[in-house]
Length: 400
Image (cartoon, rainbow, N blue to C red):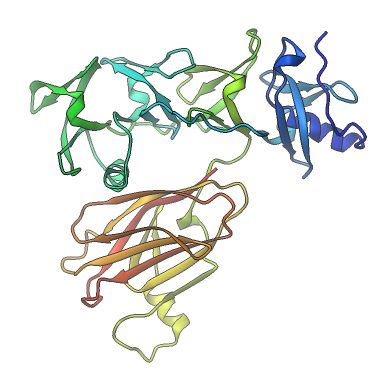
């Protein structure tokens, strides 16, 4: 009989339940397969360390001072203890329409399906319409801002992204037909070409016509993949976790490779949050009160975007649980004239990202914010005056 125990066995019953939750990673074969985890409950309790026995579509089963079954609705998160991501991760990355990011070693697609082949996992086949992008090489400080900027840019069709020898990325619009081996078949104005993969940064696919189904669970694994699942599934295979993505594709992962499972809202846009502090200091002095100046000329929300003028700064409180700030920024396209604009992003006083914007090209960012208390955005003129210097932060969002 497989017996899993919670080390803090003297806890009162509510704490024991929390501990049980911490067991959120389940092994049903033997105690040798047990995984140390911490579990966070909706009651506010956190138990650590504990061990998990099994997971179904509606509950987890733990054993400790007593055997218990806990419903998923009572859980906030399950996190591994003393386990790190793999030091060598797959170099290829697929981003799905539901924002899932999947690391893989091989990828192929045709006009119907895409096959993602991650290391240590079974190949995953998904509808090609679920793909948002395929990045075919590892990122670096030169290409990352360009690539992330292209991802957030509005487009009507597919984009093949060519990487030049100087690291510059050139997007080419058309239709992505298939990818097999080292060749991408791509249609340019009705003319089909074979593009060598080693010359490409990746492929960005046309946005989906329908919004993805809402995800309720976020799962992160040791390869660096992050899945947004709409439901967990009961699994007859021991030592695995199965779940459904928003397009109903089924994923099955070894439990030993999972870092965390989280039941909560996956993101928050800055446009929907009130800044803890915000001000604007134009180059030309004004007699206007600072609060009134900020009310008139400070950043404005435009859907999920923020539009800000030069010499604007704002600070946002970062709630616990958020791990990443993601988005992009570009010159506001409605501005007919303007000079250079400098954008800086900091956490707790430490600069994490900065770029100078001159043309309409978007620069993307993906900044770790785990443990940060404050997030600061700054838009500065490029020492050439602030006339016409406006930027658009495109979907800046906090991700869990």
